[in-house]
Image (cartoon, rainbow, N blue to C red; front, side, top):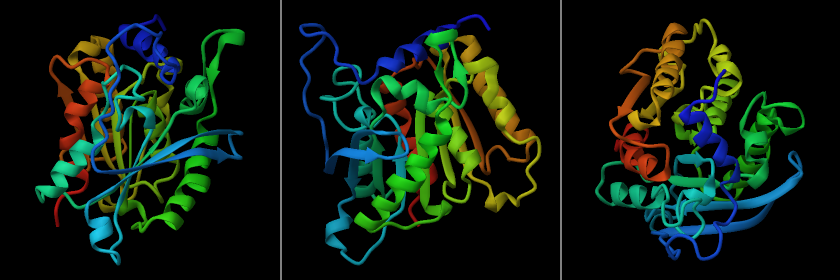
Length: 293
């Protein structure tokens, strides 16, 4: 497949944890809102590396000590809460701001957000299910191991450390670009754990659109047992990116998902492939996944 605008931008995401050269770009500033704890050097025996895990707690967590909360797991944790660590200086998902404001306004249920840092140079390896690229420069193929890392190492630790509601109805996944690929992959592999999938600006192009082939041709589960699936794309991410995202939605629909009930596609006019665009869609996804009861 010929490279596209979206594929070129996504490939740059492999460097998402590297520091932008000194003296370039605006000065970084902290932008954390609310109660966020950074657990550094979280070790993975499955992947053989370490990373930070960042945890946002809602205002009710301390105020209601007997209460448990649903959990949103996010990939590329460096980009989720803080302009000090985001790939583009001061351009982050504002997940903490979105959750804090919606919770305080009574528009969503209080939630815990667990933002898992990516593996730096290993990001492409961990997020993609198959190899991409030529020969020795190929990357990808470790998505099953990354899935195991999250399900067998991160989630048990989170459930032991924090007061969480478990099960697919209380557990969501969110990621963009390659993070959208791993979100889709993990949702298909572990529907027993993840019942809400936010697949944002997914890199459907990888490996000749192998992701489309991974969606089951038919799924006989009742609609109430299917994960909720949100897919989006910005119009400035390229015509092929828009088509790929729509084709992913169509694959889910062909397997039995129903648009408007447990499947949504949002085309974001003039939105680009960056954290600012994904931040602008956070409120909508949080209100869809965690509506106030």
